[in-house]
Length: 168
Image (cartoon, rainbow, N blue to C red):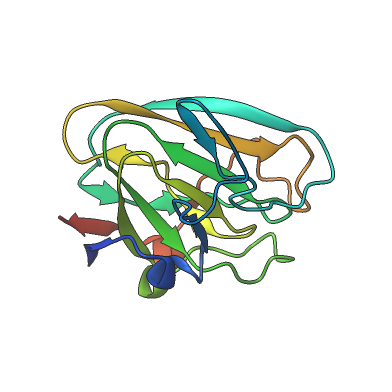
């Protein structure tokens, strides 16, 4: 069993797994009395319709033994009023249906409230969980069949069936 320490989210640290959509500064693209708009904040290339979902989550489990990935599409995650934790591992072997996540390269990030992440296609990831209590977060993903169909059973065990103990 390996132990992984939770890291604070930054664009640099998260770069191998996707992108952090930052808060816009500078001149708004549109504005009016009582509102300003910054658009686009980020671009995501898609080839099919996107579905929007919500996940209701509780506290991060003490151990994680599997992750999921989407090899042919990015996933967008945005948090609500509570910070959440999410484990990720680098995308690799996208064409290999037998690929598995690797504890040696996995990280756990603490994601602040009202943050938007783009989970790069192929990035292994857990659901997000709260640090304390319960919350919800939203996600968007293309509604198309993945190159490697893991949608029926997306949770793939770590190499050597290892387990990660989370160190908060």
